[in-house]
Each structure stands twice: as structure tokens, then as C-alpha cells.
Length: 122
Image (cartoon, rainbow, N blue to C red; front, side, top):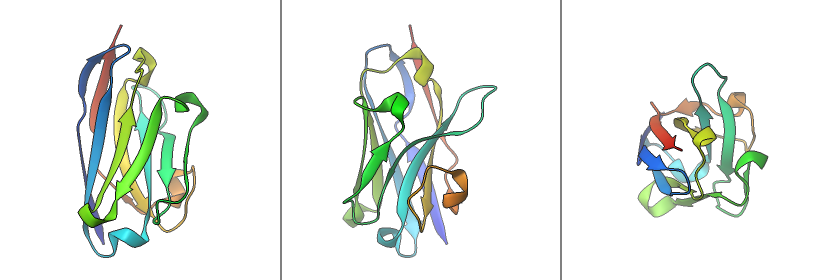
């Protein structure tokens, strides 16, 4: 079992930056791939970024490429999402997830955090 707690969300102006953190507790965090998803009001949850348990492979959704980056620190049981050049359309609740695979689908992940709100004003 893995418990995930996100933090770092907030209100930021367009063009600004935020760094989200997700701290994991439970067993064998370092063996899980980690993902970030987001859900805007009235929309389905969508993939943002993922990183393999080794940290050697990571990728982002096309909509955030060049602006967002995912990283992890297994010693701290933490995964990060650095978000730069934020746009109003990035406004959403951001969720951290953990799974055995490395995919873009929600079904690839077994554990989910409660989410953290990111609001980007224009």
C-alpha cells in the first residue's frame, strides 16, 4: 500500500511558476513509476507527466512539453512537478499517482493522492 500527499498548489499569474510535490509513504516507493494527472472543471482527468522508478525515463503530455518537468528523489520518497510559463488553461486539480508500469492512462496507476488545486489567472 502506498499513500500519496500532494502540496505546492496555489494561485499564480499567467507566465509564473509553481513546483508541486508529492510525498509517498508506505512500501517500496522507489520501485513504482510515478505520474501526474490533472482535472479541470467539467473535464476528464488527463495525463500530464510520468517518470520511471529509476528516474531514467520521463515524459510529458504534448500540452506541457517545454514548460513542465517531472523529477523524483527516492531518498525523500518524493516526486516533483516543476511548472513554468503557466497558462490559464493549466488551471486544474493536480493528482499524483503511483503504479508498476509507465503509462499515460489512469489504469496504469494503482494509487492516487487527494489532489492539489492550481489556479492560473490571466
